[in-house]
Image (cartoon, rainbow, N blue to C red):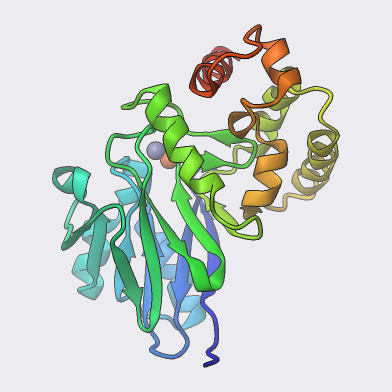
Length: 258
Ligand code: ZN
Ligand code: FE
């Protein structure tokens, strides 16, 4: 059975955030993923003639839930968010966790529990549309800071995302790619995929174009946080043969001090 796929609009807001509007052309339903701010969201919806029916939140930080209540008041929409963070998601109606499915019209997404950046963080995977909305868990050549989780938790969260198909488009919530890439080159300098990716990123940013979305395949090849199994990376951080979470933890620590 064929159907039109999910339509996705990527809206840059604040300093370096992206929020996303996703639209099911069949049902007309539209969700806002992580609405940081009201005005830009409303303008982007109006420009497309889309009336929002849902908000999908990935985690509780203000730059992801800031406009929840205002948009709910304006549109009476349904707010879906992480069950583990129920108390910290303004206006939440439906609390979801690992293995749950959420729907936008006839389009389904799997909820993946990815703690680490925050203790309740979730991601939304639209398998039929090969799209992942992962908030501040996985970035292009980077990953979220560990505000509320341990390196072991974050590594296991990232492992779940790495298991998705390579062609999965990764819609991360920040344009941090240039800074991430500069750090990546310090721990993985011989990686030719990373070198090539950095040239692309420099070119895109010089023209003020986004580097998001990325893909699971690109990240597995170029993101040092997904490459603790690399022998040359292990060598550079002085942890040859160490357990992968320990190598990941060291890379994360170095990035925090970069
Ligand atoms: Zn965050
Ligand atoms: Fe954020």
